Image 1 (cartoon, rainbow, N blue to C red):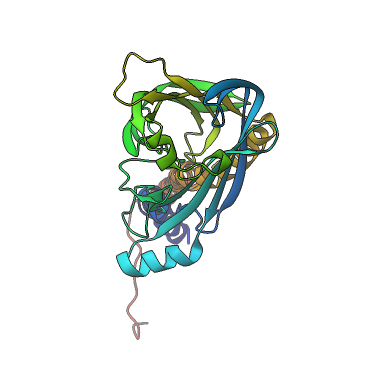
Image 2 (cartoon, rainbow, N blue to C red):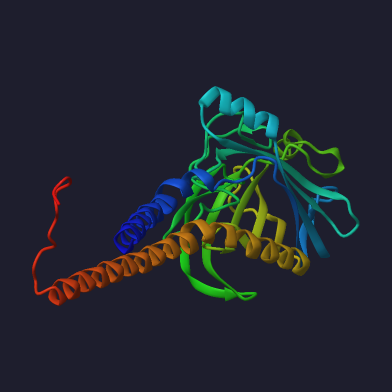
Length: 333
């Protein structure tokens, strides 16, 4: 009976040891994914910002600029792209709406971002665009992959419509979470004008005045290394209108400010990530290591039962003088 129990324990130990790497390296890449129907809103603010007055073409200081970023998962479009490409994708329709202290629109930039639900790699289908202009993204945007590595990534900049490295700058503690800090600097670059501007002005009107838009920013993210979700983001952002063909003429500051997430939105992001990271850790750490430890315990119990059975057998033989048991054939008296 003990030998049978030791064999059962040995089989369970082998099963646990085999299941441990399967959960981490086979199940996790297929189970962990961004939900297709996600919806969230974040509000960012810049205090004492500089804005251009398109009526006078002069800069003015405002007490606060508010940027509302809305992200909505387009489930129907994701289904169409999946049927077309055979890949499990997410389609995010986003809107960045900037408003002055009086609530008047400063700019509004829509985007569509299509990416693989598991790896977060861009998928070039489904009409990806920035402000209505088709783009072909290279690298990540908005979210890092699951299990972020301590390295630089390619990050897409919506203003320039290009990608550039965003650099890993170390591990920090943020609101009780250990996060990775990333930073990207975009040098002064000529960028397209938004299609919608205040006072009903269009890009053609600005160009006819002999002006073009230039931009630079220092972008900062605090990213949860388990889920790949940023829990905080800031930008030191500058824009100016430069005179076409007149490099010596003084540019007009169009926007300047340090844009930060509101504390309430930071708290909400931290709380959401703290919950989601436990689900990822369950598959990548808790269950694999737990199964491995359980397999070791079961193996030790199996070996202990086998050794105990062998000692009992040896003691029985010693008690009988080492003679094998006599077997009487059936039918013999």
